[in-house]
Length: 195
Image (cartoon, rainbow, N blue to C red; front, side, top):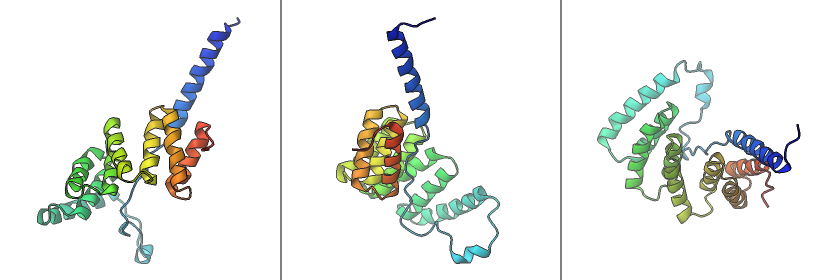
Protein backbone atom coordinates (compact mmCIF):
# COMPACT_ATOMS: atom_id res chain seq x y z
CA UNK A 1 0.00 0.00 0.00
CA UNK A 2 1.33 3.41 -0.98
CA UNK A 3 0.86 6.38 1.30
CA UNK A 4 -0.04 9.87 0.24
CA UNK A 5 3.18 11.97 -0.04
CA UNK A 6 1.89 14.42 2.59
CA UNK A 7 1.21 11.56 5.03
CA UNK A 8 4.67 10.14 4.30
CA UNK A 9 6.28 13.52 5.14
CA UNK A 10 4.30 13.76 8.38
CA UNK A 11 5.33 10.23 9.37
CA UNK A 12 8.99 10.97 8.63
CA UNK A 13 8.79 14.19 10.66
CA UNK A 14 7.15 12.36 13.58
CA UNK A 15 9.77 9.62 13.56
CA UNK A 16 12.55 12.23 13.40
CA UNK A 17 11.02 14.15 16.32
CA UNK A 18 10.83 10.99 18.43
CA UNK A 19 14.43 10.12 17.55
CA UNK A 20 15.62 13.61 18.50
CA UNK A 21 13.68 13.44 21.77
CA UNK A 22 15.14 10.04 22.66
CA UNK A 23 18.62 11.16 21.64
CA UNK A 24 18.42 14.25 23.85
CA UNK A 25 17.67 12.44 27.09
CA UNK A 26 21.41 12.07 27.70
CA UNK A 27 21.92 15.82 28.15
CA UNK A 28 22.56 16.62 31.80
CA UNK A 29 23.06 19.86 33.57
CA UNK A 30 26.58 20.78 34.60
CA UNK A 31 27.47 19.98 38.16
CA UNK A 32 29.24 22.96 39.62
CA UNK A 33 31.53 21.99 42.48
CA UNK A 34 33.00 24.55 44.82
CA UNK A 35 36.48 25.69 43.94
CA UNK A 36 38.07 24.10 47.01
CA UNK A 37 40.04 20.87 46.95
CA UNK A 38 37.80 19.25 49.58
CA UNK A 39 36.51 16.55 47.26
CA UNK A 40 39.85 15.50 45.81
CA UNK A 41 41.65 12.39 46.97
CA UNK A 42 45.01 12.98 48.56
CA UNK A 43 48.07 10.77 48.44
CA UNK A 44 47.28 9.80 52.05
CA UNK A 45 44.04 8.22 50.79
CA UNK A 46 45.90 5.96 48.35
CA UNK A 47 46.63 3.23 50.91
CA UNK A 48 43.13 3.14 52.36
CA UNK A 49 40.52 0.61 51.23
CA UNK A 50 37.51 2.07 49.40
CA UNK A 51 34.63 3.26 51.55
CA UNK A 52 32.03 0.50 51.78
CA UNK A 53 29.02 2.71 52.42
CA UNK A 54 29.25 6.21 50.99
CA UNK A 55 25.71 6.98 52.15
CA UNK A 56 26.68 6.26 55.75
CA UNK A 57 29.75 8.50 55.36
CA UNK A 58 27.56 11.24 53.90
CA UNK A 59 25.11 10.93 56.81
CA UNK A 60 27.94 11.16 59.31
CA UNK A 61 29.40 14.20 57.56
CA UNK A 62 25.96 15.83 57.35
CA UNK A 63 25.40 15.33 61.09
CA UNK A 64 28.75 16.94 61.87
CA UNK A 65 28.00 19.83 59.52
CA UNK A 66 24.53 20.32 61.04
CA UNK A 67 26.18 20.64 64.46
CA UNK A 68 28.52 23.32 63.07
CA UNK A 69 25.60 25.05 61.36
CA UNK A 70 23.94 25.45 64.77
CA UNK A 71 26.91 27.58 65.78
CA UNK A 72 27.10 29.48 62.47
CA UNK A 73 23.63 29.39 60.82
CA UNK A 74 24.62 31.42 57.75
CA UNK A 75 28.00 29.83 57.07
CA UNK A 76 28.00 29.52 53.28
CA UNK A 77 30.59 26.70 52.89
CA UNK A 78 28.66 24.52 55.37
CA UNK A 79 25.34 25.24 53.66
CA UNK A 80 26.88 24.49 50.25
CA UNK A 81 28.38 21.20 51.39
CA UNK A 82 25.10 20.13 53.00
CA UNK A 83 23.37 20.86 49.70
CA UNK A 84 25.95 18.76 47.87
CA UNK A 85 25.46 15.88 50.29
CA UNK A 86 21.68 16.03 49.85
CA UNK A 87 22.13 15.87 46.08
CA UNK A 88 24.65 13.02 46.33
CA UNK A 89 22.10 11.11 48.40
CA UNK A 90 19.49 11.57 45.67
CA UNK A 91 17.53 14.23 47.57
CA UNK A 92 17.68 17.40 45.47
CA UNK A 93 14.55 18.76 47.18
CA UNK A 94 16.52 18.89 50.45
CA UNK A 95 19.29 20.88 48.76
CA UNK A 96 16.96 23.63 47.53
CA UNK A 97 16.29 25.42 50.85
CA UNK A 98 19.99 25.28 51.72
CA UNK A 99 20.91 26.89 48.41
CA UNK A 100 18.17 29.51 48.81
CA UNK A 101 19.60 30.38 52.23
CA UNK A 102 23.03 30.88 50.67
CA UNK A 103 21.48 33.26 48.16
CA UNK A 104 19.83 35.23 50.95
CA UNK A 105 23.28 35.72 52.48
CA UNK A 106 25.14 36.14 49.18
CA UNK A 107 22.72 37.06 46.35
CA UNK A 108 25.58 37.19 43.83
CA UNK A 109 26.85 33.65 44.54
CA UNK A 110 26.78 32.17 41.02
CA UNK A 111 27.87 28.70 42.18
CA UNK A 112 24.91 28.44 44.56
CA UNK A 113 22.50 29.83 41.96
CA UNK A 114 23.76 27.36 39.34
CA UNK A 115 23.30 24.48 41.79
CA UNK A 116 19.86 25.79 42.75
CA UNK A 117 18.85 25.75 39.10
CA UNK A 118 20.17 22.22 38.73
CA UNK A 119 18.31 20.96 41.80
CA UNK A 120 15.10 22.71 40.76
CA UNK A 121 15.37 21.01 37.38
CA UNK A 122 15.90 17.64 39.05
CA UNK A 123 12.74 18.11 41.10
CA UNK A 124 10.71 18.91 37.98
CA UNK A 125 10.63 22.70 38.33
CA UNK A 126 11.85 23.52 34.82
CA UNK A 127 10.58 27.12 34.94
CA UNK A 128 12.35 27.71 38.27
CA UNK A 129 15.54 26.17 36.90
CA UNK A 130 15.46 28.47 33.88
CA UNK A 131 14.69 31.51 36.04
CA UNK A 132 17.61 30.88 38.43
CA UNK A 133 20.10 30.02 35.69
CA UNK A 134 19.10 33.03 33.58
CA UNK A 135 19.64 35.27 36.62
CA UNK A 136 23.32 34.31 36.42
CA UNK A 137 23.38 35.32 32.77
CA UNK A 138 21.85 38.69 33.60
CA UNK A 139 24.95 39.66 35.54
CA UNK A 140 27.45 37.47 33.65
CA UNK A 141 26.24 36.89 30.05
CA UNK A 142 29.25 34.72 29.22
CA UNK A 143 29.03 32.34 32.19
CA UNK A 144 29.84 29.17 30.32
CA UNK A 145 28.21 26.77 32.80
CA UNK A 146 24.97 28.76 32.96
CA UNK A 147 24.86 29.01 29.16
CA UNK A 148 25.37 25.26 28.85
CA UNK A 149 22.70 24.48 31.45
CA UNK A 150 20.09 26.69 29.79
CA UNK A 151 20.87 24.93 26.51
CA UNK A 152 20.53 21.52 28.17
CA UNK A 153 17.20 22.47 29.73
CA UNK A 154 15.93 23.55 26.32
CA UNK A 155 17.33 20.43 24.63
CA UNK A 156 15.66 18.19 27.19
CA UNK A 157 12.42 20.14 26.66
CA UNK A 158 12.63 19.55 22.87
CA UNK A 159 13.18 23.27 22.20
CA UNK A 160 15.94 22.55 19.73
CA UNK A 161 16.40 26.04 18.26
CA UNK A 162 16.77 27.58 21.73
CA UNK A 163 19.19 24.81 22.75
CA UNK A 164 21.31 25.51 19.67
CA UNK A 165 21.35 29.24 20.42
CA UNK A 166 22.59 28.75 23.99
CA UNK A 167 25.10 26.08 23.07
CA UNK A 168 26.53 28.26 20.32
CA UNK A 169 26.93 31.01 22.91
CA UNK A 170 28.57 28.48 25.26
CA UNK A 171 31.13 27.49 22.65
CA UNK A 172 31.77 31.14 21.78
CA UNK A 173 32.26 31.96 25.47
CA UNK A 174 34.86 29.27 26.22
CA UNK A 175 35.31 26.44 23.69
CA UNK A 176 38.02 24.73 25.77
CA UNK A 177 36.02 24.48 29.00
CA UNK A 178 34.18 21.29 29.90
CA UNK A 179 30.86 23.05 29.26
CA UNK A 180 32.14 24.42 25.94
CA UNK A 181 33.18 20.95 24.82
CA UNK A 182 29.87 19.42 25.93
CA UNK A 183 27.98 22.18 24.10
CA UNK A 184 29.95 21.46 20.91
CA UNK A 185 29.08 17.76 21.24
CA UNK A 186 25.44 18.67 21.82
CA UNK A 187 25.40 20.85 18.72
CA UNK A 188 26.77 17.96 16.68
CA UNK A 189 24.04 15.67 18.04
CA UNK A 190 21.44 18.27 17.17
CA UNK A 191 22.84 18.59 13.67
CA UNK A 192 24.12 22.13 14.22
CA UNK A 193 27.71 22.94 13.47
CA UNK A 194 27.82 25.69 16.04
CA UNK A 195 28.45 28.34 13.40
